[in-house]
Amino acid sequence: MDSEEVSDHHIDYPALWEYVIQAPHCREQYSVHGPDHWLRVERNGCILAARTGAKAHIVRLFALFHDSKRLNEGHDPGHGSRGGKFARELHGHFFELSDEDLSLLIYACNTHTEGVHHDDPTIGTCWDSDRLDIGRVGMRPSSAYMSTDFAKEIADYGTTQPWLHLAETYLDDPISHHLKYRNWGEN
Ligand SMILES: [Fe+2]
Ligand SMILES: [Fe+2]
Image (cartoon, rainbow, N blue to C red; front, side, top):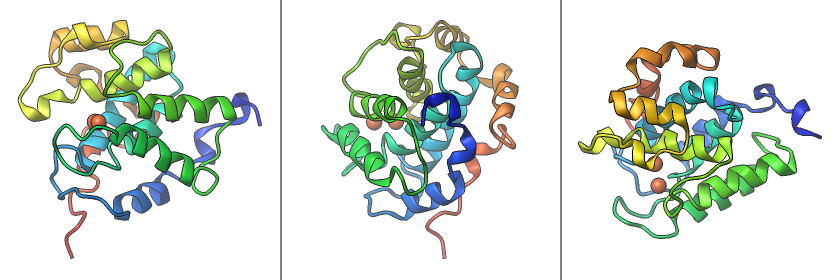
């Protein structure tokens, strides 16, 4: 299967998200590295992909997996590689990627804490999507840490608000997207 044949239609996002959220983890419901964060990273990625040339389906999968295997909320070295390994384990079950796309996804997960900038638009967009969500811990995004010109523009502006509509290509409701799993963990 080449990458031209792969579309979002091959990815069962709802089932995949449910599975990953329920998998063993250390996250609290409102964890700074938990599902709320993943959803904001996904939304950032869908906004950025409109202009960066990134493969949106890879960025969306990165959003879900990159922090999915944290053992704690601190430095946690190796959590990116564990997330990448988890993505490889689930490949073929909830999603099917070309070899090239699977490599991109796993590389982006593995290196998202160590890497600074990357020229590949998909990898750069993955990392930028994560770093644009730094506001959740009271920090302002910095354009110095962004790989893509569009993410630099958003970081300098300070919020994604003016560009939320760009995510409508992929998300039903970009404004409330990050609240989708708000009740996760409650019985
Ligand atoms: Fe991370
Ligand atoms: Fe993250």
